[in-house]
Length: 159
Image (cartoon, rainbow, N blue to C red; front, side, top):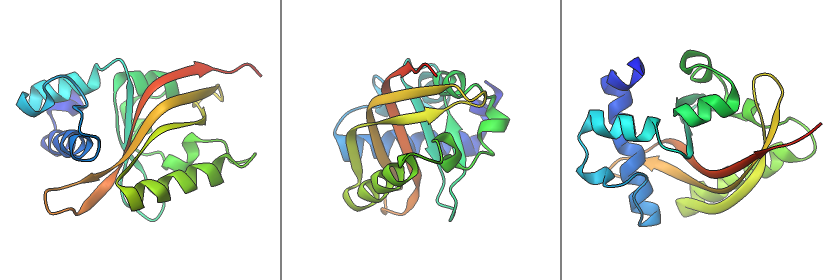
């Protein structure tokens, strides 16, 4: 977990945790507000839920994934954090338009809860995410730094 020691990753972890609390009224991990930077990094990275986040580029690039997410998408940190987030969903069958509508709704409302959709791993393995929170990652001034997803449940799909 060498990336967890990166000060920029640690600062972004804090933004994710604070924003999650701000929008949902819940802690992303137990006692997130009371954890120091390295404790928070470890708690997020080892959480049983999948946690991912992308930046604010025109074609957003993933900037965070915890261990559970890396396993789901079958990628390592360096590969995942270079991936445009749109490539995490299938390009056809209306999934991209559903994903885009979700992202827009979260932008407008701050967060969306109970989202579900199909995603695809690096090997092409499809999986269904559900009971997912998507929220805006913002600082204290409300400046947006990205969007993140807290995926509570998933199941792999056949064929």
